[in-house]
Amino acid sequence: MQTNFTPEQLTDPRLFEADAMLKRCVHCGLCTATCSTYVMLGDERDSPRGRIYLMKDMFERDREASPEVQFHIDRCLSCLSCMTTCPSGVDYMHLVDMARSHIEETGTRSAKDRLIRRLLAALIPYPERFRKALALAPLARPFTGLMKRIGLPEIAAMLALAPRERIPPARFAGPGTAATSDDRRKRVLLLAGCAQQVLRPEINDATIRLLARNGVDVVVPPGAGCCGALVHHMGKEAAALVQAKQNIDAWWKVVEREQIDAIIINASGCGTMVKDYGHLMRHEPDYTERAATLAGMTLDITEFLTRFELGAPRRWSSLRVAYHSACSMQHGQRITSEPRTLLRKAGFTVLEPPEGHICCGSAGVYNILQPELADELRTRKVANIESVRPDIVAAGNLGCITQIGLGTRLPIVHTVELLDWAFGGPVPRGLESFKSFVSDVPGDAAA
Image (tube, rainbow, N blue to C red):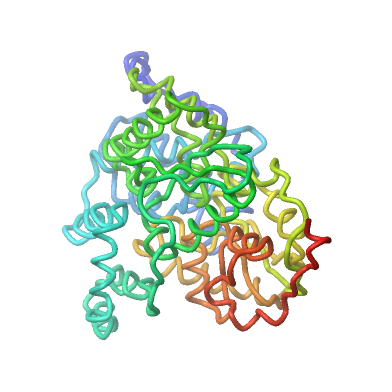
């Protein structure tokens, strides 16, 4: 793609980077075939290629974000399927994040949009605030229909996503160390996350149990919190930097004083963000080197377990598992075979739903900010999953678990919960009725 930045504009580091990214696009249009919003809407401006043209025009003219640009960039899921497809290596992830930041700085939003975005940024990254907000959801849920009628579908979407059942308390909560009872083989840091530890604390519990049973000490350092992805994808770059720096500071204190083998992430959206800390901190000289080092140590839980010999499972099952590969897993981190291999080795029959590259519509808080499109994507995703007739669904990202779970009666759990169950852990919440389909392996065989 030919660009028309002036020499003066290219002295701006951000525009210099944008120029290099834009030039890699050759207009081939292969990205349109795998873009979830273009497949649904058929509008060129809702394809990666169309959005790149809109961003190019906005950056070259160095002007405030127009309503048209803002509208179509807002409808981008950041699923990154286009980057997996692109033969030219266009860095769409960083380009669209740059555009969102520009929109946040120069665009004009309605009072309602500004309020909702501020509310999400102030609640979800902070577990205690988020927990208190969810406690109020039953009181507000009867007004869901009213919220839609008065033009507040985002609030209705929030209420729909709030869990209706009681969430059990976490077995491992707060900072601390879960020490293995076996000979220690590895020592890792775990990102406890924000929304995940509130909505499904069993995911962290299962991760810690599975690792500790296999000679891995798990450390959750004080001071670490949200990875920063939620605010980053809303264009709030300064807030994302603050949250990322808190994690870097907290983790570095531990890495400096003791041997740490990896930083473990069990939410693929967070993993994509943390692995990108080196790029995020490229203009922060006090953090650049540490951020790159920590990003290089970061592994999804399935990556770590694949490199780690778990041995034979303690339980064997005939359960059919539809594996949903989150966009942040397959496109953001390019992790494809590891979760499937682990599930098969654990005794599950792994099924591949059609259109696995299409997003489920969660995408952070997309299912709140763009509820109609998110609902369409969920309906399509659920139909594809149910078409393979699974017993249960597994995914590696809380957002997908929550989003898909709203559209199907099939139970859906995190991949690590199934692995923990197979290797000696408790029955995951929601799978109690399947207990009779799982049998214990005789002691000698499991040894």
